[in-house]
Amino acid sequence: MLNRLYARETFGIKLGLENISRLCAALGHPEQAFASVHVAGTNGKGSVTAMVHAGLVAAGLHTARFISPHLVDLAERFVIGSQQVGAADLERAVNDVLDCADELKASGVLPVHPTFFEATTAVAFELFRRARVDIAVIEVGLGGRFDSTNVAPARIGAITSIGLDHQDLLGDTLEAIAFEKAGIIKPGMTVVTGDLPREARTVVAAVARDRQARLVEAASGARVDGEPREGRGVIRIETPDGRYGPLTLALRGEHQIHNALVAVRLLEAVRQTGVRVPPDAIERGLTHVEWPGRLELIDVQGGPQVLLDAAHNVDGAAALAGYLERWHPERPTLVIGVMRDKDVAGIIGALLPVVSSIVATAADTPRALPARDLAARITAAGAPVRVEPDPVTAVEDAMAAGQTVCVTGSIYLVGAVRDRLRRRAILR
Image: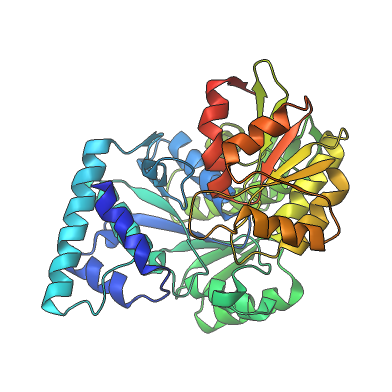
């Protein structure tokens, strides 16, 4: 069953709504069977999606979550309540969606087969309809305007951040990328924005005006006080609509304080639609959320600590570097693997001052930059590097030195090593 779905990866990435719109129509519009919150952004959108989902679950709502990509198991993308969907339910939904897609292609309704992401998006909608969820929190896959998730008629959305990433698909400037991400804004929507660069903020505000959407800058009228303790923020948040804390964020990193504020304003926006989301549920969304592979610290039995972080662009690397500088002055060994389209020099430039040595590797995906090619780019950036193509071996070799290891550069790389580490560790 999953092989049939994974075969769609050969169709690559195709931005556009024609295929997903026709597929959803043929399925009877499952995307319209529940309310939705739509979350876009260069960085932070996954963390915010997870926090908002956790808050809605804590509020007692029958809530679903769709994210991408997954670390290890496809089922990670589809969460209903606090659990991933079951294998049998997933198999039925995948087969039904792909059968429908094949019929549409054979009849000429679909000009091309749906991509992997188009198919998984339709599967998510179908799973959530069958489970009769009240509300789903949906993470944008790429961009926003032409992302498959954009067929969901969300009344509430967010743009967490805007930076340079995926320039080959979204444009070379912050303004162009902002326009693509602002494509999730729909008429009458409430859209919460994080701390956006001025030029990006101008574009988002213009789109919101054109579509008569309500724009809420997360920091506007809000106050956040606190300090980091052992890598986590201990904070108080005050907004025009509520007070929260003091509380300790579940997710590590000072950047999660910013994400927490966006999540709070989103949950308040849901409450303003008449849905009961009490303050204590919002707090639990921040303090009890689980989001693996994001500054996840693992104590390996008989070995050093390993820090996993899915930072995959320059902004993400800068946030990781800030965390390492503050909490890991021992300067860990860096095990890194990136995708072919990433700014290797920018990522390495951010991380080099806070690590002691570098091992180049590669996740097992055609999108990955081969380890030797990555090493050549790292060398060109002025840093010495070792090469180990196999990610597990790369981490094991780095751990043998007996000091902290940081694994980063791609969620696919983190996924490739996380389960093996978990079998040897106690998660902190």
